Each structure stands twice: as C-alpha cells, then as structure tokens.
Image (cartoon, rainbow, N blue to C red; front, side, top):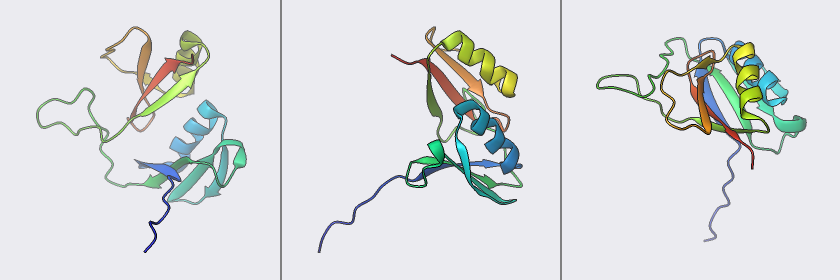
Length: 127
C-alpha cells in the first residue's frame, strides 16, 4: 500500500456572514474570490485554484473567541499570521477595513487584531 499524498487546500473560518468576512480578507490580502455562495466563499491568491487559500462558511451560532481566553471563555481554535512590509501601515490598513486592535498585545513587533467576525490574527513585519 502506498502512502496517500496530503496537501492543505484551505483554512476555514466560520462567520454569521461569510461574504462580509471574505470581503474583509479579500481587501486585506488582495486575493480573488474563487467560489461565492450564500453559505460558502473561497479566496485564493492570484485566483490560483491550486493555491492554499481561505474559505468562509456560515455559522448561524458563531461565537467569537475571547483572546486571551479566561476560564470558561470561548477559546481561539487557530489564528492567522500575516506578513506585512510595514507593520504600522499594515495595522492602519487592517483597522480601516474593519479589524479591531486586540486589547492584549504580547509583543512589540507583532500586532494582534480581530477580524470583523472576532477571529484573532497577527500582523508581523516581513523580513
């Protein structure tokens, strides 16, 4: 028996409004919409269907995580690390698109933000 080949195709984020959340990340990352339905949207860089991308699915009962989580809080299941050429300008752009700055900032060289659905993501200076 041969070992099957695996490849990551997408990270899926839940949201009560997948089109709205996809629109935020589309503008932030400058990616293209590959699939667009009421309950499911897929973004890929450069419109490349074979690239790893982000998908957004409708979750009617979406509860944004609390970051950092305390006892009994909805915990973050994952977060996205996004490289940017200029951290201050990247933070300003993300905020203008609808992100919120997280209250807790654990590092000076990273900005933790929350997307419009409340998912944490980190911006860091591209090296």
